Image 1 (cartoon, rainbow, N blue to C red):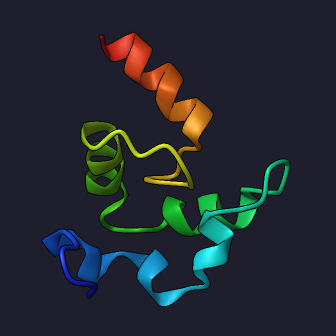
Image 2 (image 1 turned 90 degrees about the vertical axis):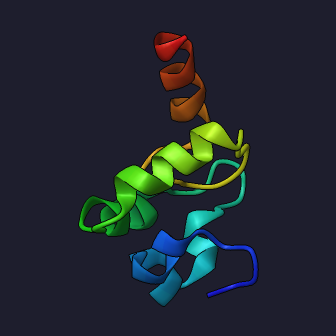
Length: 76
């Protein structure tokens, strides 16, 4: 686990895979990252973390930046 990472990160499947899949270039595919997130036991916690910390880049909890913005608007 990286210094400063939340406790749930140890269980995150993304920590065991290629991090580049979770930060695709603009217009790049998010399919692989979302597939990993779909079976991750801490995806919900990951998404909550991203929303609470206003993460603006990458796939978090199976959602892209755009999807998180839309979700945040619906919640607010």
